[in-house]
Image 1 (cartoon, rainbow, N blue to C red):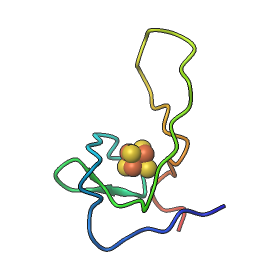
Image 2: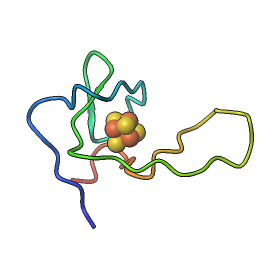
Image 3: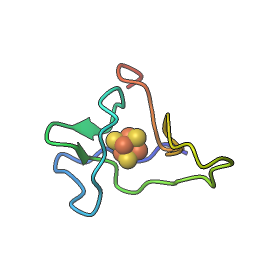
Image 4: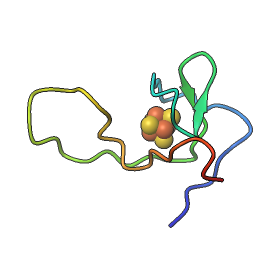
Length: 58
Ligand code: SF4
């Protein structure tokens, strides 16, 4: 299900994944809500945000 992209950042989220369609300048996220999956390792490389959508997909 597509998550709505808002015109304002979601103030409760700080994210540095600037390759994401929802990313907003200043390390903000414009997704109405996000889902984060359980990580299987202690290495936090990459993103575990399952709302992540590669830029240009909309
Ligand atoms: S959807 Fe997830 S990966 Fe994309 S900007 Fe928001 S928090 Fe970051």
